[in-house]
Length: 394
Ligand SMILES: *Cc1c(COP(=O)(O)O)cnc(C)c1O
Image 1 (cartoon, protein in one colour):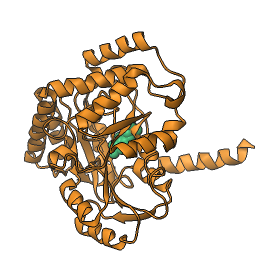
Image 2 (tube, rainbow, N blue to C red):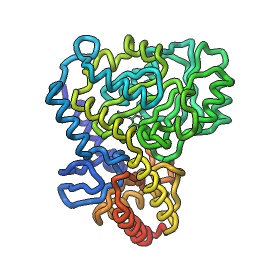
Image 3 (spheres, rainbow, N blue to C red):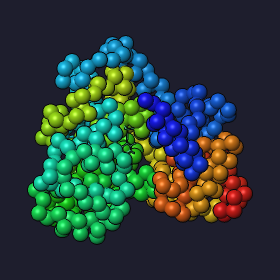
Image 4 (cartoon, rainbow, N blue to C red):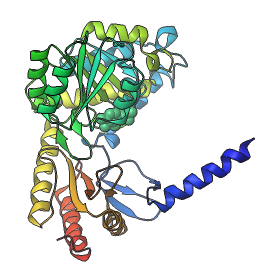
C-alpha cells in the first residue's frame, strides 16, 4: 500500500523545505549560453559547466545533425550486442590521442564511468585511497567494490602518505582523486601524488570532469597543468561539461584496464550505447580544441580578469587558476539571499551552503566561460559590489 510511505515521504519533503535545502529548478527557454532566457527574465549565466561555450556552438550543433542524418537517432542496444558504430570507436580513439593515453571506453555519463570503474579491477585484497572531497560518483563507485577503503584529508599529502604506509599489506593500491575540487576550484596536487604513487607502488586514478578540454596549455587537464602526462593510470572525464555539454562520459588510460572494463564494467555492459548525435558532436568538440587553442586562452584570460577584479572589490575567494571562483559569503542564509538578489538583477549565480560545503563556509560559486564577454563580467562584478554592500559582506 502506497499510503504508508506517502506520508513518510511528504514529511521528509517538508523537512527538506524547512531546512532550506530544497532544490528548485529554474526553467530556461533558450539554448545554454552566457546569456540565457528564463521564463521570467534574461540573465547572464555564471553557473554552467559550459566552460568553452561549446553548448551552443554552431559547428557542434551541425556535427550533431549530420551525424544523426547518417547514423540515425539511436542504436537501441548495448555496445557488445549491436551498439558499436565506427564513430564510437573513432570517438574513443580521438579521446585517447587527445589525452595521450592508450585506450578509452565510453559510458552514458561520467557518473557511470566512475560507478563501473572499481568493482571490475579490485577486490578485498586491494586498497583504495580516496580524497575526502571526491565527487559523489567516485564515492558510490568505490562503495560498489570490496576493496579496503582509506580516506585522506582533502589534498593533504602528509595524510595521503600515512594512508599509503598503513595500506602496505594490500595487493594493489590506488590513489583516487578529483582533478579539480568543484566546490573550491582548487586543483589536486597531482605531481606530489604521482611521486608518492611511485614511491609506494600505487596506481593513480583521476576524475578530470572539471578540467578536460580547458585546463593545461592544450586543455589536456590537470595532468598537463601539473606536468604529469603519462604518469596517471586512469582518467575519467565527461562529455557533459567543457566538451560540448551534451552528455556522456569516458574512462581513459592503460590498455589492459580499459579491456577489462569492456568485459566486466556493469554500467557499460548493461546500459545503452551513446546516441550517434552526441558521438559526432563530441568528436567535433575535441577536434575544435585540438586545432585551435583560442577558446582555451580565452577562458584562462577571462578567469584571471574575473579573479583579479572580484578580489579588488573586497571579496575573499578560493582557488587559484580555475574558472570555478567561489566567492566567500560565510553565512548560509546570506549566501542564498544574495544569490537570489543577483539573479533577480540579471546575474545567474548559485549559493552553496551546509551540508554541501562545511558549516560557516557558505559561498556563491561563479563559473567563468570563454563565452563571457568583458562587458558581461563587468556587469557581474558591478552587481557583486552592489550586493556585497547591501548584504554587508564588503
Ligand atoms: C560532473 C562530474 C561528474 C559527472 O559527470 P556526468 O557526465 O554528468 O555524469 C563526475 N565527476 C565529477 C568530478 C564531476 O564534476
